[in-house]
Amino acid sequence: MSKLFYDSQTPIYRNSDKTRTITLDNSNNQLIITNTNIPKTIIINSEEFSNGIQTLPYTQMYAKINAVDACVYPAPNATTLQVQDTILLTNSGVTGPTGQIKMGASTFDISSSQNIVIDPSTNLVVDGTLDMSLNNITRVNTIEALTSLTITDSNYNAVLLSNELNISDDVGETSSLTNAELNIQDASGNSSVLNKTSLTIGDGVISTILNNNKLQFNNATISPFIECNSSNQLWLENGNTYPIILNSSNSQITIGDVSNNGNFTKIAVDDTTRKTELNSVDILSDCNIVGSSYTLPINFTNKFNGSYTLNNSNSWEMVASNTIKIPLGLYTQTNGFNIWKMDFAINCVNMTVQYDKAYAMYIEIRDVNGSGNDYQGWLFNQTTPYTTWKNPSTYNNTSNTSENYVYTDYYEFSGATGSPLEIRLFRYGDNPMSCNFSWLLTLSKTNLV
Image (cartoon, rainbow, N blue to C red):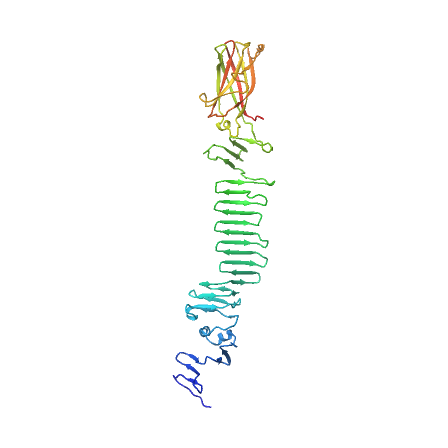
């Protein structure tokens, strides 16, 4: 049988009525079949292709003809696209007016030995599920209308949704990332959450919370038990038997008005000298009695000696005075703790008169050293003074004509305005008298019960 060869011509095959044609276009490298009513079959190298059923696996077709032609070839109806090598998708090799690859509800499955490279100018649009188990994705420019992207191995699973990334392992630990929150959760459901306003770290019972207002630690029974908040408050609370420890070995802890900018109230613990300093308006103890608070005693003693003379008989006269410096805050107390007990003892020697039957005296205390408020004792004052009369002492071994007087009282310093205090001794008698004296006066905070 003879063969026909055509040089630079376009062969056309027609049926008898010339209604169907097969044209081999040498110029455009195209094979054109004009019949639209019957299936078309093409056989290349003994392998059959048709527009109804693709009998040649796509991987074999890709190996037999070049990649561009394979992409141009109409997409098959198979549900799985298997690739043994790298897929390079560029605008120049993708059908469609905008250079996009479109897939229906099929699964796009690539084995773990493959790489997929998508040119930055290409958009990958998937209507169904894009399932990839692969070594790497070199670059993806945009993914539009993506239902999910799942990457798995034997122990881990990663799922990328349109608004969320979920990572999990085979024991139930998960991580979830959205545009507003990162949530890390263990197998028991305990989670730590980071969002744009706060960070919460916890196991469902014990937690740490950090946000723009506070740092808070919560335990199993107390919420919060440690908190530093936006009001510059440090809150420590312990409902268990464990101690709250502030360790300052070989250093100092100072609490309160540290810089002395306000009321100067503070507590300082100095480990180097083993000393605790209390500078407080109210130093209280509840004595383990719920609802009751008592001030702790603090004592100030004034030691003074000199001489005095009672010049006028039958009239009150201030015969001696001295000052005692007590911090103002200690006798301008809050919550009514303004009561001070006074213990007074005076020893008089070289007295010109020992036997005055009208002997009387009292102590008046004035604040701001002579120019402020006067405070008289509750027990002994000008109306009810300390009075005594006794047989004169005849002791003369080391001193002569000596008499001593001791009494106690209490004072309430409400409204006191400053320090030092002035101790003023008032004296009364039938006879003028002079003497030498020494006194001890002690003021102690006390509780009236």
